[in-house]
Image (cartoon, rainbow, N blue to C red; front, side):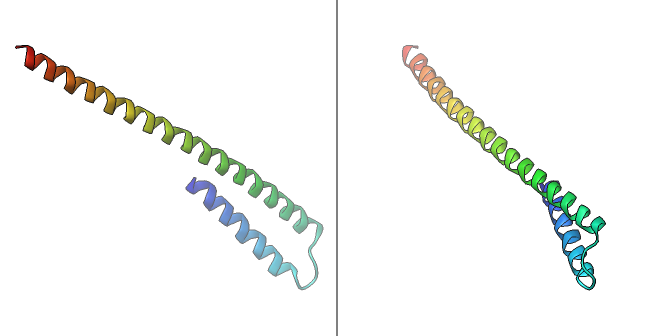
Length: 88
């Protein structure tokens, strides 16, 4: 996720640099093509970040579910121990 964010910042910096440098005489075709490529890369990275965030949310839910299962199993284990102690 940090990598994607760094790439996004780098792309934004390059886009800003090209915009500032090109203001004096207007952007060339090459600069416009580079800008479009950067825009496409930013869009791709944003989709990747969204996908990773969704994956992270799903994994966090799975962890919470497993922790709840573990807590229930430990509670049942404690109850079983108590019943065994009371029978002895």
